[in-house]
Length: 401
Image (cartoon, rainbow, N blue to C red):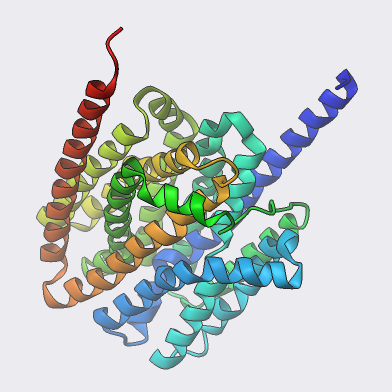
């Protein structure tokens, strides 16, 4: 390869990384404008906590089957290269429709439809990001950090803008931001191996791997815990008397601190500790977060709790992406990411969303958070023990030198 070709390839890689950062920023800004406020909107139109929990759990549950379906459809129609643009654009339709079609039946249908379009977005973006980074995949946290950088101001500004106004403006904000993301994605191409593609033997070998099973079981629990916080923090703050502006500040604080950690500390911790110990840090932080929610029912304390988001969800996310990439069979990197993010994490989020709604309704928020704190502690202890036992087995298996 000539120096000119090398320089051209470097410029192309840098350009794609910059585009990816902007794409993550726009997509996660749209989430910031709606994630905390959809459940609040559902409460304002009269839904109880159990019904809200069902709506929350539907999205990740549908995502489990949506990935393979999209992969098959993209191949059949020949749209794999443009799939990211298509699903981003289509996700706008059901989200905006929720502003007017707000009976429970319509909301179930629209949430199912939204989940079908939403579910491939993250795996496709992650696949493009990891492909662009190559051997520098530990820098994924930096690119993902731009998502948090977009989420933070969008959550806060949205809360301030809708305070005393029609909460349905959040759906218009989502539409504007996702329209920009769809236009930006026109310059990107997802690899042919994105989503669920790979040979049956490779997938089988991955699923039989004991390290994979142990780690993904822990990821399932961590994502269930995170969905409880994602979905019910806003409702809890509303119960404690917080304004929409304060709820928005809570989302911004969590996302902002997570951004700082992803841009600096988490990549360094990952390289020094490895994905297993980083996931243990996540579990330990969940114990603290749920303890604060359960024991100190004060609005400003609950709001400041979100500053620990980067050490709970951020650490778990970075650890999962790195672990899946490192343990993927050759040629199945995107498939491993999709299995981890859509199947394992999707089941976890669905479980957390539905169980959290039922617990919030039957136990009350503080008892439900206390129960989640116990689950966090059990998860931390169980995963720590499993990691130590696996390390001991590997040490015994090493031949004497």
